[in-house]
Length: 202
Image (cartoon, rainbow, N blue to C red; front, side, top):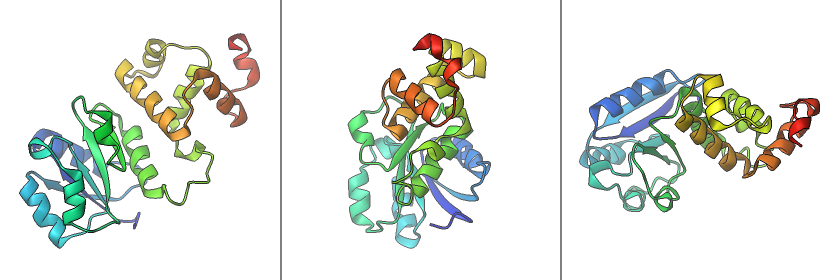
């Protein structure tokens, strides 16, 4: 994929969400995104017949229900990555068919990190994962290993508790670390915190 000009199709029936996401994509740091807004499943079918975007961001409820497997089969273009735009409660099993996802409640750092991760998945498999984390996620790890609650972290960083929970879920997925103790070891090894800063938590 060409990072200099990234073609992203946004498949969403809501004009507010669709246009809003297109505007956010244009502002993502270090990414030159050319978004294309797609309002109906028929329009998406027509678009994919003529074009090969780098990424398709689709609401899993697009057009009533977005059958991703059928879309992939009908348009045999394996280089296209698919991301789920989560705006409602979605069965986690549905999200497994996508290459990635983010929520409409996520901030710009999280969206940029998710898209960057999607673009570099193949070449960064051997990386220890730190470069996949946004600066915001590193700040949250530091807060977690210092024993702060989600509410305390949200207050400190001026974010919602929901956003903190989303960040922590993303951190766990990226690093495959699912416990505060594991995050503590990771933070020390990667010099995100000094040992004396967290000795009271050990």
